[in-house]
Image (cartoon, rainbow over all chains, first blue to last red):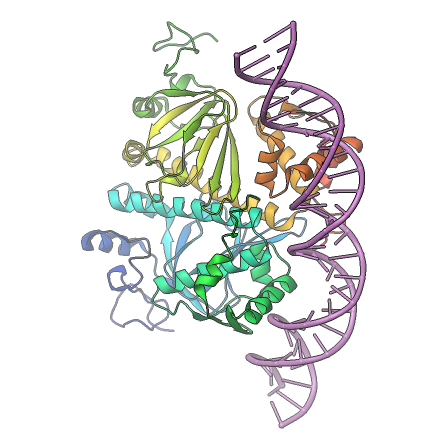
Length: 252
Length: 252
DNA sequence: GTACCCCTTTGATCTGTGTCAATGCAACTT
DNA sequence: AAGTTGCATTGACACAGATCAAAGGGGTAC
């Protein structure tokens, strides 16, 4: 691997190469959202370049010293927490344009693991430098806060899911959420490959893998989706949505 | 230590009275953590005074425009999310020194409700002004970020609880968490009043109120705690802790 | 001080999801 | 191309927690 220095002589594909935010088609989803071209350049200057990860590789591990947050440039990640007593909980799945690593800010040590579920690439954003810049650029500061807050709100949604929904409701919510995020990235809302295993889905949704598998099968039997291993095609989004809203407005 | 400079002609109880951060015994737990006396004064200047809430009153509601975050000065709160289809999930319980309202930063509208579970008092911290000040005071900025990140990490803990634990494990974790937080505030680690109902505990833990009640009774039968309605006394913290760590290190 | 209402407790039964187990499918390795 | 290995599916059964129901108990409001 030659070029990986700061000189942008060579375009996109080269490993470690830095693609400027201004040229990145994820910028509207990502940290530079709302920045002027000028400010985007300043953000670019502190971004420590990209990092490629092979499938199965850790971006960081619980216990690692926190120095940077990461923006997913391409690929797919999961984050999970594990405790001494062997519990393992997937806390999220991250795709292009989403920010990883904010769990580490609080103690300056990462509290979860981030693993690439397919060959992936991230931008490395040194946090101290980001803080310095954000204290100069009002809109960057505000957006950073929004990104962190959005993570809190997302977590509340997961708590709702885990606390109040039944297996099929959870899976429907999960599929609809993926669908919506793929849409926002210009992919098909109805057809996609799951990058994670049934077990990882189960961990995220608080279910056993068999239950996930059975729910997929039932959805398929009912003509809601078609499943072939990791390939999913959603056939009836509206009906999938009705699964989330119990007909009687039942209070659980 | 009756040194109470600034205003204190009239003591604590007066409605709307502003107690300076420097005089507040929660400062080490709260937003001003780590600030110099000077910077603490600047923070004081932007804090919009205190607000008292009667038990059962809302501090804010989902849908309210976001303007401030709040520091709990005294009392006890719950936050909950509810969806159109009638699901209701308690997302947290907040006590003195903890920060409320960060859910609203992301969309500038609150996404959950915050309710006082006893007569309470909060400091009102206008967020835009806090951002301005935090861009000038490095340690304030860093601490604000830590507080937000801590909330994310806490949420991950709840996800773990909801995703992997059984009823008694959840309740044990809940009690130990309360105990630890009371301790940090100088209260007894072993004896306290629950401010919330069994139903609210259940909602937070993803259980029905009957299950919570039964688990309390079982803990009492086993000599782990003593319960009389909302009064709890923990009798055997170590054994309560062992409930969290399945003996065989079982992987669920 | 008293009465009401909400909260809590406890029991009996039901059910959704977990558990255990076996088979099937597909991708990767050599 | 065949063997290996991990992942997914499906079935049978068990059980934790939900649901339904009824009876106390305590705090709050008047």
